[in-house]
Length: 168
Image (cartoon, rainbow, N blue to C red):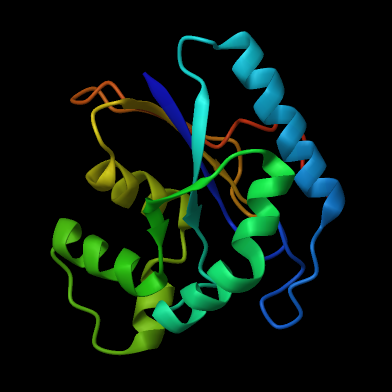
């Protein structure tokens, strides 16, 4: 049994996609939360990172992420990204379209529909998890504290790893 920690980027890890300045206080808060969680839950530790950020639109953005941010985030949090759990907006859209059976005519329609990030996260992420993952967290500056217990799979999904708000 393992847990995966999905991260948003803008206003959570970095200030914005244009300048990509690290928000060091937030990184340290997340790192502390990981350590505390793993100490309290040795039977289901957070073992890797995923990416669920609307800043990464396509493969070009993902390459920038890999070259400029990935290694520094991994070092700061002492965990590695599992590329199976790193999605671009294009991939999120494709999965969501398949699961919800919707068609987006315009790019702006996608963001309008996917705007409720918690709903999209709870809908999309279970479809990509492997059987060893039984708990999933999302750390995102705009998503409130929510929990979802998926009865069919037994996976617990939560945005409650950090109980206090991150520094904005």
